[in-house]
Length: 212
Image (cartoon, rainbow, N blue to C red; front, top):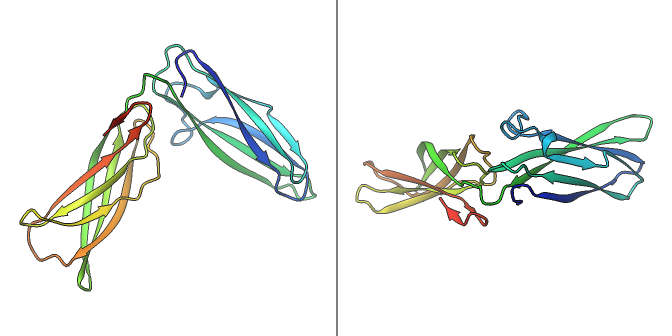
């Protein structure tokens, strides 16, 4: 988290776990679905990394230092990915590439907001139990990425709670995008009738102090 006009630095440590000398390079890239980056902001305008390459002996470690410059009018969140490429020093040249996502939230400009845009629910029987499978499509209408938690509760014809589906979380949603979370739950065998399903999601940010 940084304020408008701030500069901040950090470091990524890499280790050569192989048995040969390796050349490791870093490449900051715009990262958003299809590597679009933060909307309207090029990664080169706010992020730089030094050095660009490191040569490491087997078992040795090194650090890449990155510098972030937040524009005076920035709002929401910068998003990028640091790609690290490793080339071995043997006769056969094989290059591997891994990425690390970098988020920079701009203090006092963050908006945490989301909505459920679609709910799909199916029920099946498993012996004496009912199994519910739910899909909840969630859209991020704020300006900072979220990793919401959620559940779907099912109520019987008399209004009594009968079972819950806990949604699997972990996948983040970038601003302006959506993701469908899924989950399943078991409960008593349901009799024919009219049931009600209620879906709820929540996300919290320590900086914003808001729950949705």
